Image 1 (cartoon, rainbow, N blue to C red):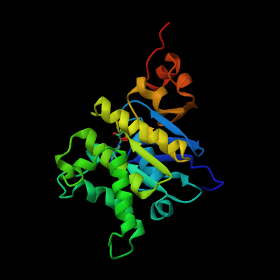
Image 2 (cartoon, helix red, strand yellow):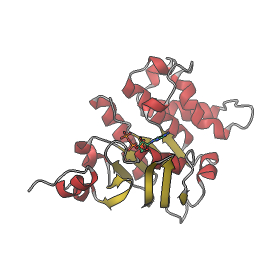
Image 3 (cartoon, helix red, strand yellow):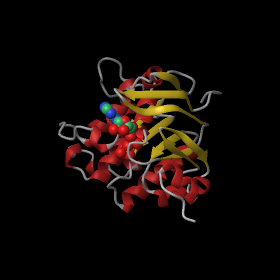
Image 4 (tube, rainbow, N blue to C red):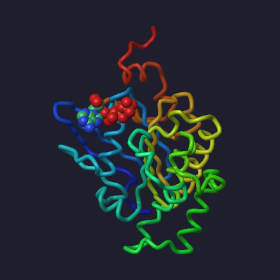
Length: 243
Ligand SMILES: Nc1ncnc2c1ncn2[C@@H]1O[C@H](COP(=O)(O)OP(=O)(O)OP(=O)(O)O)[C@@H](O)[C@H]1O
């Protein structure tokens, strides 16, 4: 852990051609917190994640993870990312264990030979997300919730101190959601910082310590209770607040 904040996004603006996806978005997260990211479709949530990961380059602004640039944070394994399901090629012939082992690549040098420590870290991560029994199955042959858990396990095996999850609960059943929520809470209690986008507003108080309303920029960053007030949700979802 460093004295720097876990995440420091400053004035990030991103265009895709003519589309303004993020407009001067700023967000600072301290260590040891779960932050829920809320916003309507197209509000820029995935773009914010990609800017933090450095896979989308902002027109303006910067994102720092533990005080370092995204590329450096990725190389050092500080940051882990669970992408939206649509962004993953599920036909890729990898087992669940292979996917989780990818979290250890940064420890393996060029040979990619897994050490005993690597294998133990993978086993522990699989156990924590309750996928031990499915470890040798192809990733594409898992259910949506199991796939999400496999990607969470990859972040665990990596030992990422900042974890970004893009809609990990979409199409996920209640037991899988509870498993993922439990793991994220444990990680945060252990000092890691989690930014997680979700459309499941009802689950927010259980999941998150703080929440952010995004509409191309950060409209509000406060406790889940405050963010979930109807007048605040109305701003983020472009609706009139009930009288
Ligand atoms: N590769 C791209 N090329 C062009 N426009 C894009 C691209 N990716 C995203 N956009 C546009 O940028 C805006 C923000 O998209 P983004 O995917 O970040 O939103 P989101 O909040 O994650 O949405 P959702 O809740 O639907 O996943 C949208 O208007 C979207 O259509």
